[in-house]
Image (cartoon, rainbow, N blue to C red; front, side):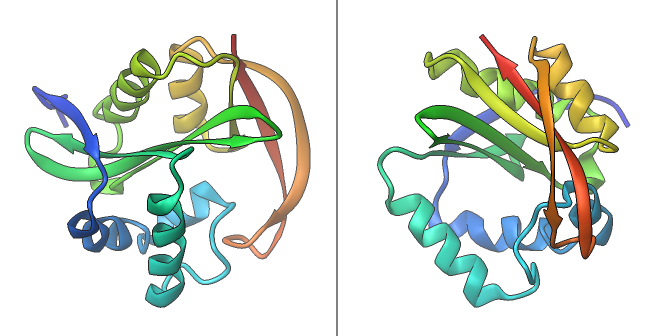
Length: 160
């Protein structure tokens, strides 16, 4: 797969949720993300989660588009007064550089630092994205991962 010509972000709209829900059903993506909702196939839970996110003025949500098509989301929120980011890309578009470009676009307009990110230690794609963007590992913790039904080590990254 080649890289898309144009990666853009826009404020997430209710009309984007169908596509985002579909991407969240991909078994490989759910397993790789590890720390997901207890039941990623529960549309009512998904919609309630996104309503809370979209209604919270402290949370920045962006829909990622590649060459005009919705391909994922990137979100910034605060945990313990530290900004955190997460990104979800349609697995059919993995390996195209979209996540790196999307997170960079978000970081370019949100200037709070430090920014933290968390990733399962075996999620090499997401680790590569974070390291390309200058995040550095600062620790790890073991937590229960719904998608795997077991405890999983999660690496914590920081961008100063």
